[in-house]
Amino acid sequence: MYHGLKIVVWNVRGLNARARRHAIRTLLDTTGASIVCLQETKIELLCSSIVLDTLGSEFDDYTYLPAQGTRGGILLAWKSRVVSISDPLFTNNAISARVAMAGGTPWWIAVVYGPQDDVAKVAFLEELREIRADCHGPWMLCGDFNLILRPEDKNTDNLNRRMMVNSAASSTTSLSRRFISTGGAIRGRMSSHPRPWYILIACSARQTGRTDTASAT
Image (cartoon, rainbow, N blue to C red):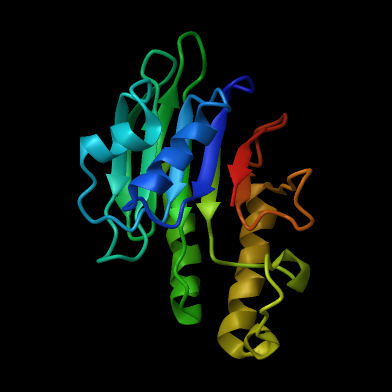
C-alpha cells in the first residue's frame, strides 16, 4: 500500500443540495487527497455534473453505488493522473475496487455504508467477510459502518442501552469485534474531536505499517 496516498472518507449526509456540494468541495481542496470515499449520497442516479460540482475537475473518474430511494449511496472517486482504480465489485452495502500506482503493488479498497437495522447488521458483517475473500492481497476497508463497539464510540449521547444487550445487538457486537480482530482494524481519532471516529479503517492482518486517513463528520 502507498503511505503517501491521501484518502478522504466522509459521510456527507446527502449531495442533493448545491450548498452542501460546494462546502464539500471547499474542504476537499485543502486536503490534497487523490481518492475520495463518500457515504450516504442519498442519490439514486449520480450524474457526472453532480460529481464535478462536488469534487472538481481533478477527480476525473468515479464509480458509485446508487442510493435506495433517498437512503444510502456511495461514491468512490479518484484522480486518474495519480492513481488507477479498476475491477469494481458491487454488493448490497459496499463498493470494492483494485487500486494501483506506477511501480507499486496493487491493493484493494472497500467503501461501505452499513445498514441501521440490527438484524441486517449481522448479514452485513457476513457480506464484509465475502468481500474480503474476493479481494486478494492488501486490503483497506473504510466507511460508515453504523456500528459501535462500546458506548464511548457513540458520537452523540443518544444511546439505547437496551439494544446493546438484546440478542441481535449482542451478536452483532461480538461479530464486529471478531471481524476487527482478524482484519487488523485501526480506530482513529481526530485531534479536534473528543470521541473516536465512527468510521473504522481496516487492513489485511498480513499488511504491516500504518495507514493514515482523513475524515470529517
